[in-house]
Amino acid sequence: MGALFRRLIDDLGLNQARLAGVLGLSAPMLSQLMSGQRAKIGNPAVVQRVQLLQDLAGQVVDGSVSAAEATERMEEIKKSQGGSVLSNTTQSTSGSGAPTVKRVVREIQSLLRSVAAAGDIIEAADTLAPTHPELAEFLRVYGAGRTSDAVAHYQSHQN
Image (tube, helix red, strand yellow):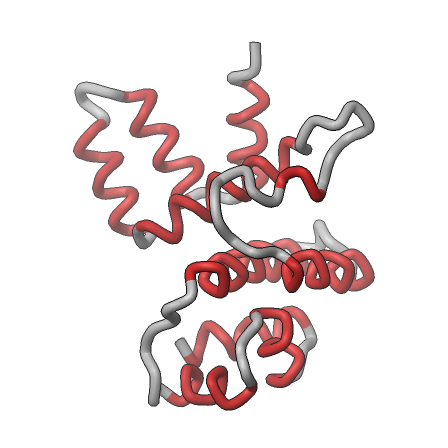
């Protein structure tokens, strides 16, 4: 876990105290997780925030999100409560009041990734592929793929 948190700190330009604040952890708890004194996060909302920050960090690194936008998104992540797949979609809506595609996709990804690691999801997809190829594709794209690929997949399956 230490390497994960150090990568988030580096990629997002945070210090340890700021990362703890965004995640909703105390600074000592984050320190224990980073040093290996603790190995597990028991709060599902915190796990979801870690996953959302990982996605955000990837977008910052690849240049698709600016530093200013990342700061704004970190505030949204900090306020998120976790929970059901669509729990946070009402916070980010288009002019019509419908959840944004990207937000829905991220919630689906977060849910899948909170249930299993990417390797396990790919293994499950491989098992399903011969009899249920569409489900296998869904698992691969949303469970182990990039957000941009999942957004494209989602949009291609609308109507």
